[in-house]
Image 1: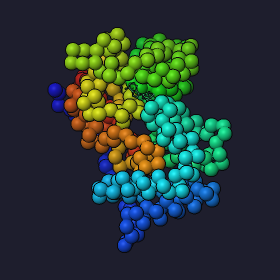
Image 2: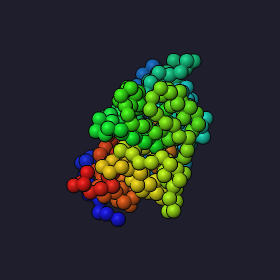
Image 3: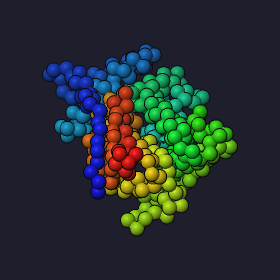
Image 4: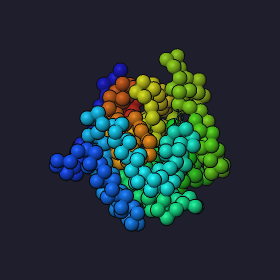
Length: 337
Ligand SMILES: C[S@@+](CC[C@H](N)C(=O)[O-])C[C@H]1O[C@@H](n2cnc3c(N)ncnc32)[C@H](O)[C@@H]1O
């Protein structure tokens, strides 16, 4: 394996200190926090409620996990009146009920991108929706789409017949307004996802574009040590990216897949992968109220993943909200790029 060259961003503390009142137990502090949030949501101040709720809830949740009180804290949250209020939010509700089998499907991503609750949402539900889809984590997902859009455009401009692969594409909303949609685009964009409904949506929206939809899972793409029939069939790419997938992958599969993606690059091509970090301010709300638990990775773990996957050069950076870390990987050393 080559020695990875790594650039990193400075790493400030991600979570504020818990606002725990001295002398109160974890349970008392949690109840006080949830009581205040429920009163504010009921009074029509959901955005303010979430601004005050999410960072300290994450800090208290860290404390609960570190002190063996995780199950107890789950119970305090599930039985608190705030729970019924936030379940009126379609974003929270869909994460909990998991109609596609997991939280964080492409429909939930659309809630974040659109910022509009579906028809029939209650007033309280719409207000909470405005807070949950526009909180730190929602902003990170919107930023991620903008970043991907810029990266795709950059690739299309740099390469005459650019080939781009999105792994776990969802609805591929980052393509909207991209140079890939322009008639002059002479390359190919390949969108791969396991979910047939998501694939249908991409095919519908991009029927007139050079977009190919592949309804396959990443295990097939990663293949085995002997190779991957799917990867061979898809060919080589100038840009391969994956957003919203690594947060669900165990380390072994993440490494195997990354190694495969690097092998699928054309000379000078790059891979970009994104992962939520453990210290994000929305973690407590996601895990306690949305039943949405991700495989979180620190910037150091992303560097390790890059090195273990055989990248010759890797660069990591965090988003402005410091919720997501990105790793950009190259197969060749920098001087060859
Ligand atoms: C959080 S969404 C992200 C969608 C899109 N990349 C975005 O940023 O909006 C996760 C997507 O990963 C897909 N996915 C999850 N596990 C997968 C797997 N094993 N193989 C292929 N796709 C997968 C899901 O179907 C879903 O569309």
